[in-house]
Image 1 (tube, rainbow, N blue to C red):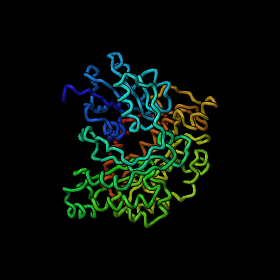
Image 2: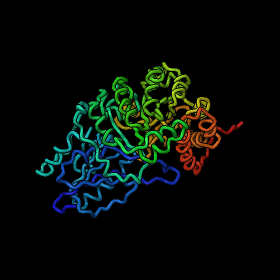
Image 3: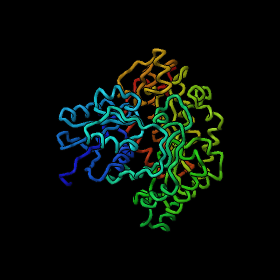
Image 4: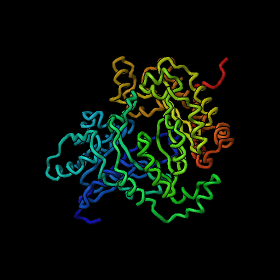
Length: 462
């Protein structure tokens, strides 16, 4: 490090998790690497992931930049306080600070509202000129053309599963009542230029891979070479396939590069067999589908009624028929929903052999339509942001008690990731990339077997 360079420390804080909440999978992230990517070269930059690194509060730092989702916000404020006591300027961005900037400003010197990449250089110039503003609003309409590539080199690959995160689009046209991310990125679907996406992919996966041998193993259901050589991509876009023509162009590049990948997408793409064929041919391992609820009424209440038009079992079979696994996610805690929902979700996962199935408690994040409605009704019962992690109930439910909802969720996870369930969903068939999903499911088994519950909705009380 050159001593004449001012140091900027980018920090992703981590709350203390008990052993029964320690998620096995450690994903990397892109938000701070993106900020580091637009930072001029005359600064020295470092990224600290507190999940894996200890923060040195006595480091000789000129500026600290924090990011945090809602359950991490209290820890972010603690970190900010430690640095500010040492005279270090602290800036905070991310969904939580963007939603509650007044709260964040009680703990930091400045807040970025929205996408930080587009205001970051202005912030640095203002700080150099001793004219730092309290708020920098980025908006949600910036073109993604010319976006600097994230500094992935600042993250230690040994700390994370062998997975490269990529982003091709931002924004979501839907208005689900529980989602704060769409408000952060906006409801306009913005796409990076294809040439820039392809150039980034080529720079990451352009050569040095034993294609023929790996393809031979992959045809036998053995994808391990792709993991060993870190040729696995996770597209973090809210909906990778919202523009199918655009997605197909990216998939053509993925096919050339011979990689494996997965993404988030809505269930409607299952009705397009040609598109699914292209996904499979380009190396798609999985699609993460937010099924959310098995009730059309619940989907309508959360402003996701478009999903109810589709036959979920038929869609899952279509994915499986094209050798694409399905990572299904659900939420529970809708008004009037009783404890039988846990059995229904479990049975659905088993009957349709979901390759991965996760259920969360419907959580009213600050700034969302759901939060505002529950606040007006006086149903928000918990103000401790750490509990806003989708595993705790922070509102007054209708149809179940808080204990039934929280312990019912844990019971569902325990049954979903039991050996019996894993056998029935992964090993018995349809065996879509079985080693990939077996590894994922087994690691969750190691976590949930530590959980203890007072209430088990799967046990016959009669």
